[in-house]
Length: 171
Image 1 (cartoon, rainbow, N blue to C red):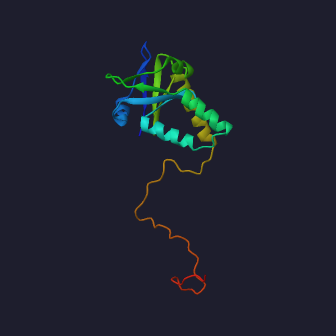
Image 2 (cartoon, helix red, strand yellow):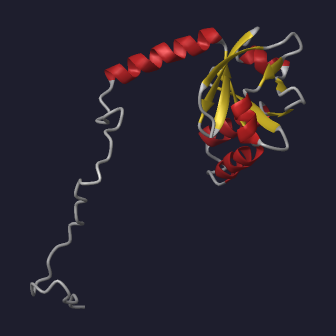
């Protein structure tokens, strides 16, 4: 899984260093599939990309939103090899579409990592924090620690008509 935030520079040829923890997660063969997603580039390990493709293929083929999503993700996707120095060459068209210049923020997002321009990332973080402040999710965060002495509630099972818990229902 990918996690963490890293700040890197994209060189003049469009090569971005992949953070070492991400390279370890990717393992061999040192390849990622990169596509445009929202205001950033999303990079997937080949197996994760195949899983995403498999999910898209089973969706209704004639649905306009499904066709749009599938076309956009697949048409913008590029296989990017990780070179011996741990960099990927980001295609120029994808860099431009994501608004990437010299500086980049590389963010782990569990099953993928994303490459953002610093300005877009900062705007996303501000908006997301505001959204979370405004929304009541009824989720306590951080989650309270589990206590081993907390009793686990028993499943609610209606008693049988005879009062015998082992009685079989009439059938």
